[in-house]
Image 1 (cartoon, rainbow over the protein chains, first blue to last red):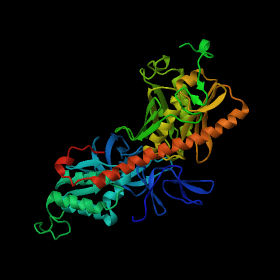
Image 2 (cartoon, rainbow over the protein chains, first blue to last red):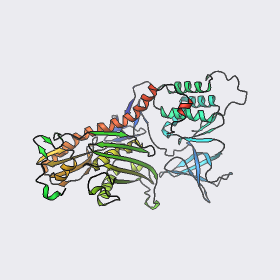
Image 3 (cartoon, rainbow over the protein chains, first blue to last red):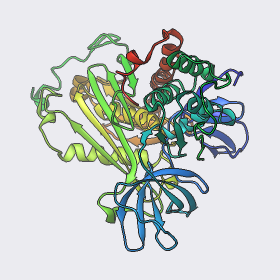
Image 4 (cartoon, rainbow over the protein chains, first blue to last red):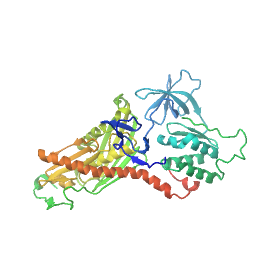
Length: 223
Length: 264
């Protein structure tokens, strides 16, 4: 993002002529911003927002209610996800943390989840969902860097929940909080790299000397 | 202060100056700050002359009570409340009253016409405006603050909306009336407008204006709204640029220092 960044406010003109863009609306043939965001090329990157379920997203949720037909799962959104127990092997309890995939979202945002997996023994932190792409980074570079230097298993849900397990969880959380605080500034990857190198005292990207085969941290990007 | 008997006795204008030394078209000092509350989704504070208002936005979230759910759009709840200590006189007694409920209702209509409620069916958005200090024109200060708070919450809207009041004092049209001008003047018109679409979202009138005066007052409203919008925009931009500056001036800090900081 080298081009000059401009903060857009609702009602600001984004483009002449009607364009279908996220965070924008068309009125009288012109396209205007609907949220606070940064104009980057022809895209509006929102600076704030809440998660609305989308098809195919991986999310991290908390089981809130058990019913005969399945579970109600809180997914850090105005809408609950429902998990049908019909084709499920596992049983969950209220309070369980799970990762799941969104199978369908209908026009009133009723959300069906599939592929549940119970997460245990780790920690979850919540970030703003608009900052999830920054935590993942280009080609998951940021994510790879965090899990390499902290040796934590990092699982990112599109809904802004991050599950951390093993390794230096505290340092990984600090790095993620730093990313979120500085999310829309440039040169972020470099600063996070510096931060992690300083904290761990090891260079990132150097061949892992003391790490044994098979001990490499599991690094998964969910969503 | 009894109103009726003293109308003619109060001198509200002195040549081209108003009570507080302003010209006819001058606004009072206006300061807007975005993001003043940690726990609210979005918030803003407006200090407008001696008015002081905090607005907070919560949601969209599940509708409560559930039977009010609208399957086509988000419902909006607006609450306007004056603190008991906000005013010298009768306004600020605790609890909702007829006036507060009316203002909540008109504010609700403003936001029903600016928020893209159709994007969030089955949810509700709570907007509350708390008047901490009052000196005339609190409803427009409240809605101006609420508009910034809604945008700060990341809720998609058609535009930032601005509040301005105009009125007639000793036969002259004046902008942004203070409490005394409001009480003893001839007319008082609070209005909420959207500058982009030139829409009027709220227009209430106390007292009388002639047809010509109404046309003239609308021009004054839209002119003054530009000033208000600029302040709103500055407040929102400042919130995000502030972060950038902090980063630029940040010393390389270690875990021990950062550990104390609050998670967002």
